[in-house]
Length: 67
Image (cartoon, rainbow, N blue to C red; front, side, top):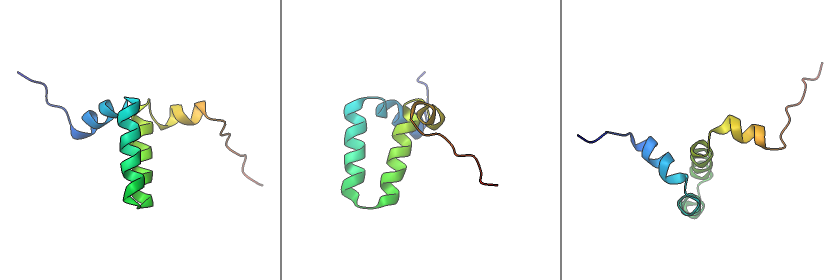
């Protein structure tokens, strides 16, 4: 019996490969819709250990609220 996986699980597994991720992002860029590109970027980031890990690895630091 084969294991059923969701589309999203299959997509994330494919996007772990650098060539697949690049092709996916290039297709989103060619589409010309910024929302499509943002979704594609989010999907690639999630495939590579999630958004929180990406944020932690980046130079981004949250600012303290102005009081």
